[in-house]
Length: 514
Image 1 (tube, rainbow, N blue to C red):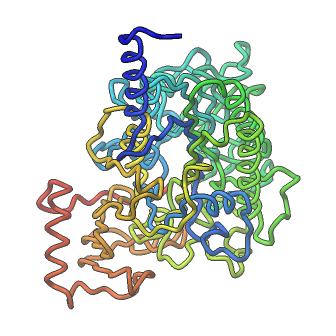
Image 2 (image 1 turned 180 degrees about the horizontal axis):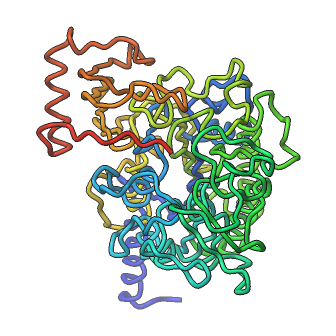
């Protein structure tokens, strides 16, 4: 059969257009599903693929072996809410003065007018979903928890959301699905306050006999499920979660999401709650390590990741799914409860060879596990390129065929795919309002006021009255301050830092520990 010439020309044009829309530097790249697996307080040294010997994470290791394991992968902040803000917006958190550790009653941190990762994917024909920890605020700061809560994840681009409002150690201790509290009861209305308790409601401070996990610092308000939290809550008895079931609950919702949307491209943000406090492994994981609850929940999280991978395989989409695994910030042991995290750590080093941890400007505050995996498309390798979670916005926009831009996000798609080696040349690091600069193999920490050691969590914060300059290629543990002996390099770093920050002097923030 012969076809008219104009039909052949049209068909060829359509094919060329389809190829060009998916090309990156001459290579055709199909539009895959994208799954971001985001751990909470998981340190560089907490994963066996990154050198841990006292704990085994076989499912994370599987991704690392089959994908790109980045040794210089960074979160945008050493604390949770700021990192999540940067991940979803492609903007450094220090550009938003409200991007700090948020209470459960904080207003939505992301403007509904702002371009976000889920909005970008949605515009490109993806279905978008979030399951797990949110911690980016809800509503206008005066939420009625007994009616539909908005704005929230759904108003910034997620078509499906099943979340907890803040953290596991903060009220309200309820799940929220598409803006509605799960199992809410009009006859038992929920009330939440971060200022005062409600009459007759027990607290960890006043009722220690009700606790199954003793608080150490900061976590002595309302008691839910035998654990005292930050903040006060009344009502919602049927809606309150059971902590030990949380990992399973989020996993099942993530699995359901994949099966429900396997027929078209989807973007899933799977935000784990482990190993953040309170560490409450399901009974089947208790005792799986010698390190107490913190070790056990890391093993539990790894199992959840393995189950999620199995679901992708069962759905028949594993070969067309880009998986990105990382953590919101570095590790911390005792972060508010007596849970044996510091007494049973043994030979395990959550920060690996790095100095500091959560809350810190030293490397362990923001250098975290960072893995990209796409079966059949990414050749396994270890990369020392500098990559940041703030770059996922521009990189994934490129992958999806979007022209969306964000002020701080660089398109590092080819680096994430393992096709190019150079990553970022420079990166601003942030911790509770304080900032530093990574440029090449050098790190500059400007003078900061405040304590040098956060005694509550036993972590060096990076604060000092003088400039600190470290050469990571020879001093990964940041033990030798070269500021006085390398004056020319110091001045170069200071100049770069000031240009990026747009300030003449470093802006110091008050140290904020939860």
